[in-house]
Image (cartoon, rainbow, N blue to C red; front, top):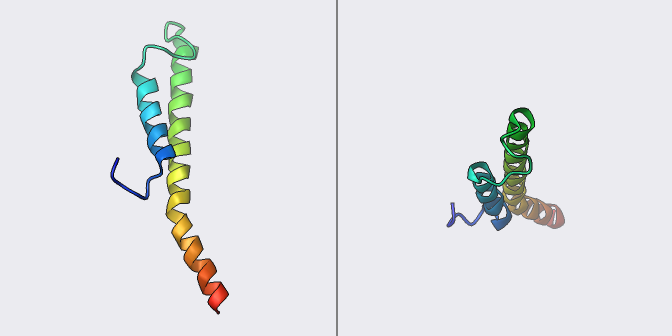
Length: 75
């Protein structure tokens, strides 16, 4: 993952942050509060992964957008 040039640094940091948040003993809402404590993990981690996937998608589309614009300009 660290050597893949198409995956932006933002996405890598978000995925690393999601993993760290999941295993970290420090939470927004402590897990001692059974319902809300687990719910914050269930919302924060997928949210961070969704943002990472969005960043990867945009990075993968960027070269295609550039080629498409060049083709339209040349036509």
